[in-house]
Image (cartoon, rainbow, N blue to C red; front, side, top):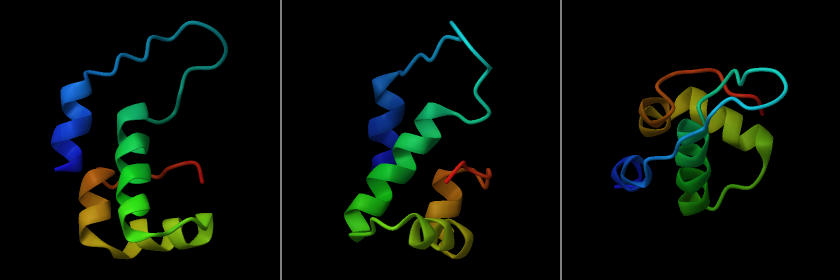
Length: 67
């Protein structure tokens, strides 16, 4: 459901200033919403969740994120 909601937002992240982004803002939003539903707020626990949880790995498309 989180994936469908974020994809329906059609977020456009144009490159305007500074360095290009190394990560997709939609993927990061999906992860934030997912960990919020799990009640996780620690960056260490989020990192562990992304490495171990199959649903989190699918949402992030197994990309490394800047945590």
